[in-house]
Length: 145
Image 1: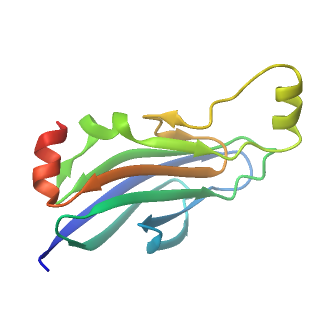
Image 2: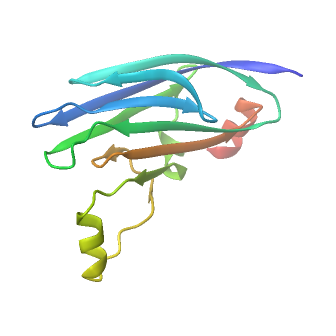
């Protein structure tokens, strides 16, 4: 089976009142970048060894929001082998984990919040962001722009 190596770089920016946010990066549910606190800005660099003709899901777990104080984590840049992927991030999804009892109270008032947000790169609530891709990576990339 053939494989390819892709170097990813993801830049984050945090804003918060009391406690900073953190993240973990996974590829197909395997941790590829450990839990990291973002005090201001942070760049996560990692290399993935990908099998050819496979489907992948890059996932960022956004953590450490206390559900009380203001806190945001923003993905400001993602590159693969130095190529900015901004033009294709519209297909990414963020799945917020809405806090209780707030979420239940909202539903009781007839307010429905979406299961996910498409293309969202600024995350307030805890949750996870996903970005799906296939290999060969550069073939997928050319077909996605």
